[in-house]
Length: 124
Image (cartoon, rainbow, N blue to C red; front, side, top):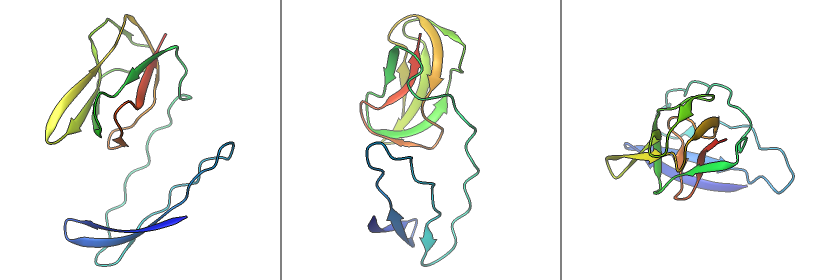
């Protein structure tokens, strides 16, 4: 476990992060313990299909935050169609389908922080 102190909009939070080892189940998310004021609770994300369900990966071109999900599982997309929009440096950046296909999984949720190269969705 690692402890971090994070300041968001002037509020200071102590956060403990657990690292999941290979082969172990992901740890359940824990709420941050605010030091200054209570943060509003984030609504639970809807259940998503198994990550990596398709053979074609749709990857983020830049690090940022998932702003909007444009496609849904089962939807047909053409090469160049927007699947996800990420926000980076106050800009909305579309992440497009690399080829024609059908969306097999959406592997990110709105608000998720993502790294460059992260798989956001898969296609068949």
